[in-house]
Length: 68
Image 1: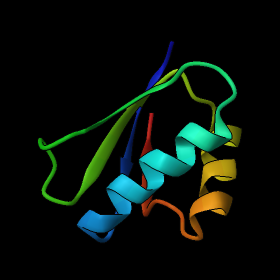
Image 2 (image 1 turned 90 degrees about the vertical axis):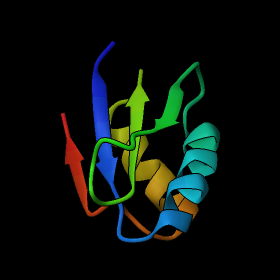
Image 3 (image 1 turned 30 degrees about the horizontal axis):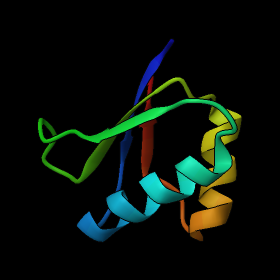
Image 4 (image 1 turned 45 degrees about the vertical axis):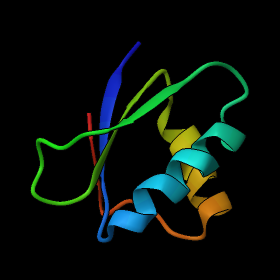
């Protein structure tokens, strides 16, 4: 599984996007806060870029950066 880090503008977006990602991914995925960044970040495992795009549709916003 690939690990990706999603960077957001606001802290509230991290929790909201994690919930949207759980809806968008049909199988198992792990999402956890990543505090090693200066901006709010979410570390995800087991998701594709398409699933991140689907989660962005559910959440109503998208990450500022997606780092693979």
